[in-house]
Amino acid sequence: MSSIVIISGSPTKPSRSEAIASYLKKYFESKQHQVETINVRDLPAEDLLHANFNSVDIKYRLSQIKQAQALIVVSPVYKASYTGILKSFLDLIPEKGLADKIVLPVATGGSFAHLLSLEYTFKPLFSILGSQQINSGVYLVDSQISYQHLELTFLDDEIKRRVDTALQQLSNQLIENESGRKQF
Image 1 (cartoon, rainbow, N blue to C red):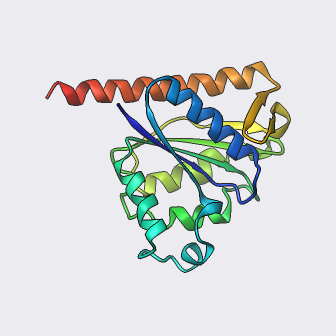
Image 2: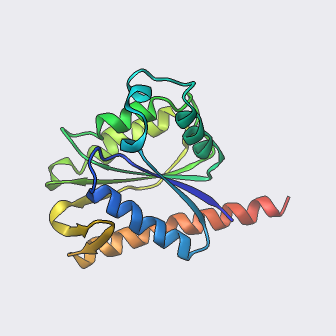
C-alpha cells in the first residue's frame, strides 16, 4: 500500500502540529496506508544547523521521504512562514527530491492574517523541490481546534470537514496512483 511521511515542523512539545500530525496518521492508517512521522524538533540540532548530510539520523529521515509517495507537512506559521527548524530540515532534501510525490501542506496560525502563507511560502518551496502535485493546503486557526497531548479536538465543524476532505482527496490520489502502477 502507499506510504506517506508526515513532517511536523513545530519546535515545541506538545504542540498543535504534533496533535494534527497524530490525527492525520490515524486517518491514513485507518485507510490502510503506511505512515511515518518525522518531528523535526527531535532531530539532532547540530546536524540541522550545520546541514550535516552525513548524519545517520538525517540520512534515515531523507530515505523515508525518498521512498514515500506522499508528504504532508504540518507547521505553525511564525512571521508569515513555516518554522525555521522546518526550513533547516527541508533544506537537506536534494533538489528535485520531491519529484513524483504528492505534497499536502497543513498550517496553523493565531489568526486568518497568515492564510496566504500556504500559497506564498509553502507551495513555492515544494515546487522548487520538484513536486508537481501540491494539493490545496489546509490552514487552521488556533481557535478552531484544541489539543491535549496528541488528541486533537475540532471546535469548528467546517474546519473538520475541510481537513477530512483534503485527507480523502490525498487518499484517493494514492489509490489511483497505486492502481495505475499495477496495470503496467
